Image 1: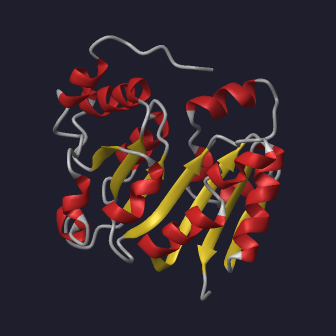
Image 2: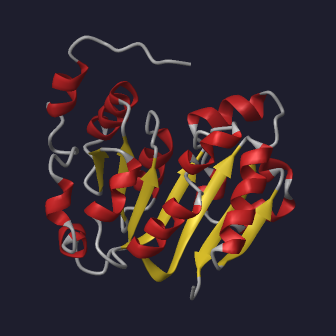
Length: 220
């Protein structure tokens, strides 16, 4: 579904400069200092309306959260959520996800979240999938060696594709499930398994299974 472009949305984004990093590439290799001593940096790629990242930031104040989103309308909704509680540990980037290696230095990110990414279902679109090897190479570059990628999707084909790509690129898989909210192991997993995105709530209400895994980069 194409989002309706709202008049003045870009100007509205810039009014939230406290939470929107205007020139994130200038922070490359300086994110640890910007986040604060000893803080992990967690990055969500494609935040949508920001319910997931705002909830986690509120519940995990010792972590510094960064959300990346290209679509102006939904990013504005995420920014408004952060402003509503004056988030002290959360910022957003208005950019294409392909730019992530230009924004973060080697090993600057502790965890990446991929929640309900566009599955790009046609065969000719595989290079656009966020778990294609060209994207995984960028994630490996910015993740610390023991960092993690947490993935959720409602799309079985995209999940199968992602598991295969993680395996072929030397990632170790953990917490793999084909039905997250009916899996008894869910209770033993972290907060990212418990907190739902806007899409996730909708799909779960329809009794659709949610696929999830954690991928850890190894030597490759």
